[in-house]
Length: 229
Image: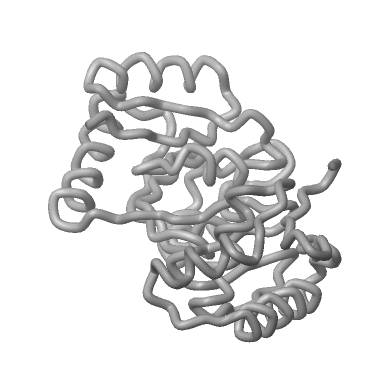
């Protein structure tokens, strides 16, 4: 299996050098499309390892390390040309797995990355099950949805309903389909129970700033609406 590495590095020459060398060991290196929206790429790529420079456009590497740690325990390795000991201390306190200073020898970086990947994935299959929905992030493993720092915890039924609606975003999902899928998953639900769960889910979404993202289509069912539609 080809391992995916998210390299958050704004120096094109360093990025290309790492990408080329890692590819020789079947390590796929991907960079962010927009340094202000790194988490979009993190969620899309679902990397096995993240390499982060400290000095970046918009937000520094510490910011992105914190954001990633809110969602995942994926291994993180910092790269930095700064030599202040506190940088290493801060990186480790935020949950980084290792720290390497620039300029570095490519074989040392490769060896560190391979060692981290072996330690992590030879023993534990770390899975990240998250998705973006409008301005929110849904963490299915934790049964949580986060939006602008606010977090709502969802019941299993609420999360299941949300997942079905989000996977068919901007399409009407009938009540019958929702109840059938809930029953197939061995969750007890009837028509009244479904209404209660949808209403509770909608209220929790509104509490964290997601208003009118699940709409009722009378006589048809429900629809999860994405922005811009």
